[in-house]
Length: 506
Image (tube, rainbow, N blue to C red):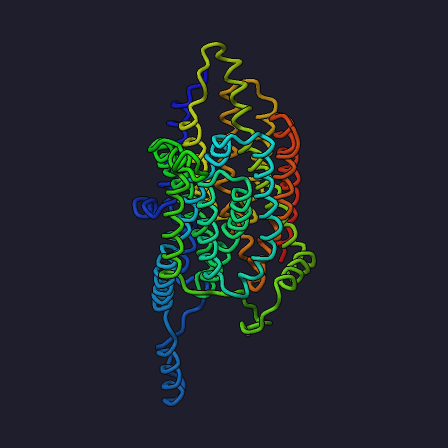
């Protein structure tokens, strides 16, 4: 029998260890272990191989001696260079910390609002009495909206301002939450369409703003750390949102305002109401804390020159096709995130079947709270491992083993007949998820042109949404679905290996 609490404890302990290793406390308490190349520092201290000037040589005339002395006096010493470099690094760290705090306040509120809704969308539609076919239509409409409308809003965000579109995200998603109160299929359909647009903005505009702000602040070298922190915080927020959503869903009875009213309150609507409040705060903090930034390049510094949404989409598509690195990033991200969505759909039935076979009549359901928390802690551990790996590796190097391990995880899930082994393999994949997002975010930050960033990010989501729609519209078994995920990870591994070679050679 699978001991889910024991596995959770082991994963939590591992997360604590790697989080400590990735933090500044490791450098503070273990400075020698944290120093990657002590011999280089000793060489710099000794002066290296550089010849030292002989200031005592006075065989030349007084004028030459004075000139030499003046030249020597004006030349900064190594100690001065080190102090200047340290001061510059300290200033950059301060700017980065200030920027990261502003970003996380807004982004984590947005992620919190999204996590609150996820587990209760299907349950709410079912509580309204809609058939499984009607619910499937609503879900397909949401992903279709994200695929179609999201393609255009990204280019508009680059031109009109990314902060404006973060506020638009908050407004759009808030309206989607409001529609959930109506037991009316047409209104719910409008809500799903709005939710699809909001999802596209969430997974493109926030990231585009962050990269643009790093460029403006001159802290692009800290970009990987920012993505790692955001992913770590996102996992914590997911656990917190699950607890709050559960309490909100059980806070009041699910019922209409009156006997003949189609407006409902309470029950599964509770998480959407909390999400609405979080979205209001998200929009307000974006206005107060964030500066506006646009998609600019050296070739187009005039932000007053606007093109149509279709023209921006066409330009983004052409830029993607012409650059093998951008195209590879797009395909890889679609394959991995598509596998991630399929995993979300299929882990419950897969694990339930195995648990039933092991426990028989004593099976009383999976401990979903413990399982979900274990997944999120694994994801947190992955983001910390990324921070550690980035001390000696580049993101394109880190990503190669990530996809390789993810492939192995899906192979284990497919062939395993034991719930414990399957659950451990699932957590291995979740750890890869924690490594993937900061890796891919940093790579896209270096590869995708700034003036087309949000538009290209939304283009990446078109094949992703095709994969999700395929999984929704076909009746694949969990085993077949995980085999498909393994195949996609194998392709992603090959493409990332090629992308690493291309990036390292350049």
